Amino acid sequence: MSGTSLDGVDAALVDFSAAAPVLLRTFFCPYDDELREQLLALHQPGHDELNRAAILSNQLSSLYAQATAGVLENTGIAARQITAIGCHGQTVRHCPETGKNYTIQLINAALLAELAQITVVADFRSRDIAAGGQGAPLVPAFHHAVFKHADHHRVIVNIGGIANITCLDHHQSVSGFDCGPGNLLMDAWCSRHTGNTYDKDGRWAASGRIIPALLERFLSEDFFARKPPKSTGRDLFNLHWLEQKLCGDEAPRDVQASLLQLTATTIARSIQEHCPAAEEIYLCGGGAHNTALVDRLTISMPGKIVALTDQLGVAADWVEAFAFAWLAHQAIVRKAGSLAEVTGAKGNRILGAIYPA
Image (cartoon, rainbow, N blue to C red; front, side, top):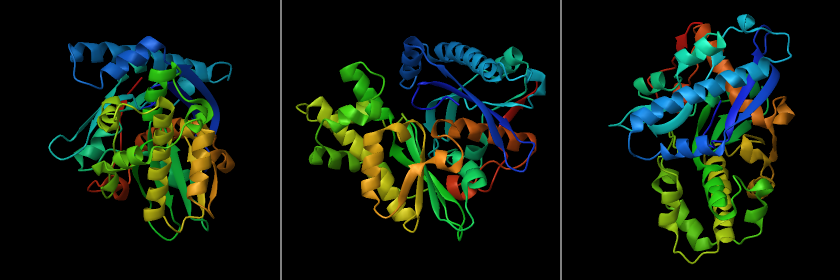
């Protein structure tokens, strides 16, 4: 999995031979600064886009192959013993709305299959969009399969570049949607003003003060009032969007504090509106390690347990990679990987295109 945060590739080795899937090993392959900048540039219209996208797809696929080799190293498990690689690719456009109906993830799946000598499952989102869905979020089906409890009403909150929630109510069908920005605006603002790729533990944000008027301008974005199903990405939430909300005289650390509050507020409001009876909130993704953000979420939702998915047996950093292994397995065994009630599609669909080794 390589997500909206653009930090690198997460690889998870998962065993599906037992009744419940088991995460055996993980590996992280970071992006270098040049690759990150090239990928960021492709999120906006520019010169020679098709050529640049094709070259980056090949570079990414080589990196995905390295991550595959890394997760298998010293395990005693050979490539020929792996059923498939599930690879999401790097999203550079996500436009599921009527009139556009497309999503683009950079990957050369044929090259990855050739380099790794393992069957590859890729292009998970397109089939759901073809069926009238948003193509995202796709992780709620996995959350339901792995984290649902027979008695406890849980919410799983994935805080990557974009934040999304999954409502696991044992009395109702699964629901879920993108809430809005997770880390991506905070990361971009932090990088611009401090040179760091992210705000470790939310310390810089915690040193600033929330600007109420700025927060209100953030929250006035139409996306937040839209009813699910809904999904979003850098096409909407980016530095240009942020700059349009600024007056220009704000202290950078105060903007960061306000961005952190935006993420906390939109997650908490989404839970309060759509999953008010939830007893347990479990966090995953990089934002789960932002201490200031977790503290703000905990304060915003009194009376609810707020913890990491580590408490459910899957470390917060590896839930998404685990999820795409699960989605690949669903494709291989010809079972649906999407939930129509989450994406808004005409029905559940088998997701992914298969590239045999």
